[in-house]
Image (tube, rainbow, N blue to C red; front, side):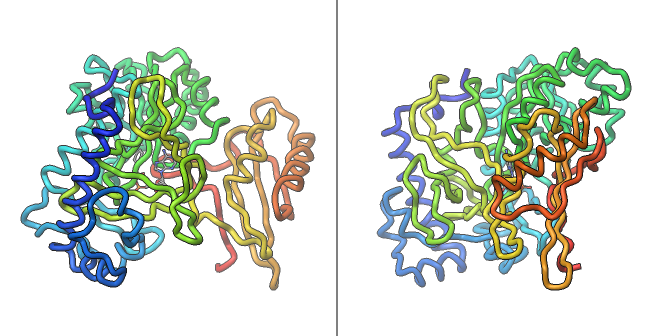
Length: 427
Ligand code: DLL
């Protein structure tokens, strides 16, 4: 099932659409946004000469810092009177990023979210328990709009309040749960603790996103909730949730590329990488009006696959995002991504899909500690040795300490995004 023809059209036809839309958006930001006018001039780009996607690589990037520098609304292409809604990032890692939506942008959001829900097998007859946070975060309202467009019933419960979540999952019998992967696992654990047979609930699909989900985490969600997991990706700067989503083949996320054009670049050189190579995802909004962005550097690491999918969609697919370029930790001079720790230990039998990394500074030296959690009934001491060996084997820098804690020993995140890294070095 697909929501609309734009997902299955011939690639050439889509390409012509993308070319036309790119010309329009470039002309529009050059006219309306001083930041882009200057950026194009600095890069020697004449907006009138941009004919289509083939010219994209010559356009300058937009970064997170650009948004922050022009806080709150310096990148808006429309006056506030023509906007319909504003969202913002939490600002926990610096100045918030504010984004603005025109009426037409909200229509696009509804459309891509309806497409995404249909890809995950959700239908108008279903009820979706929406456990993403409402408010400035785009997760709650993005899913809400998608359900309304599709005609599915949405329960706008929002994040947290686990007792109430479990109660409604049981009493309303919702077929779909939408939340972060870490919260899906937390709900499963809490349900089990309260003697609720979570796998027996009617939930048959979990649409998870907003943070990375490793394969072992996905397997745990699917097994414990007795449901299929569908990864959905997005970011506020582009639209919110609904940039890409897995279909029933669950073999990569289909990018809604008639609205959001993806490229993958080498984060060091900025060169565009060929399909199949991993790098930083860069996205251009082709149809947004309130705050279009050209070549936005997402910081997310992925790979693009243009080959056909069994589901019939002809849109390009991306790998699930397991890390960000700015996640890079430098420990005693060696480079380390948290996802490497994850990949090294989470597939060991007996390790639960929860871990944390702590970094301290002892004098001039960095100290690096990893804590993992055991599944119930596992001998922690024996596992600790296995974990240590794995990490020493696979990482560029060996941990100074490895700790193993029992089930529930690693703090869970009830609302918002899970945190894995605690860097105490600047404290
Ligand atoms: O997290 C939008 C969203 C809400 C997506 C609900 C999916 C579901 P932001 O708060 O702006 O927007 O955070 C965007 O979160 O750049 C990624 O680093 C990360 N992220 C989002 N989805 C995924 C995913 C929302 N499926 C940032 N897998 C992005 C991994 C994800 N990381």
